[in-house]
Length: 96
Image (cartoon, rainbow, N blue to C red; front, side):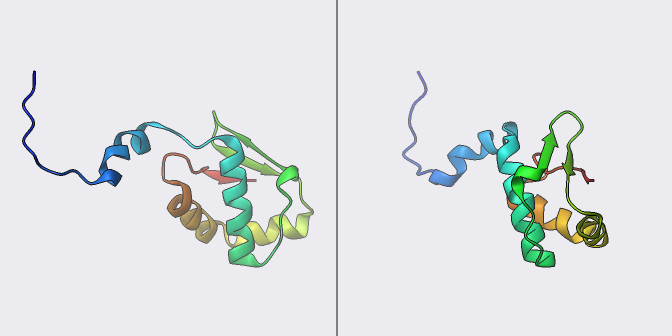
């Protein structure tokens, strides 16, 4: 049996293992991208018109071409904010 040393652990550090192993669900990824697109470009994207494929880490939007062009123009900035919001491991690699 391991002897307790009496040192205190921060509560936030107890969940670091889960942060490294778990990935965000599809709905969380879509919601995060919709929020970031609205923050960066000011365009309100409908979450129902977006689909996320976990295996390829691709988020597809069924939006008008003008909105898709605007997303492509700000792609790098959007991706940077999404990675900061949900983590590197859970973030999509492409938005089409």
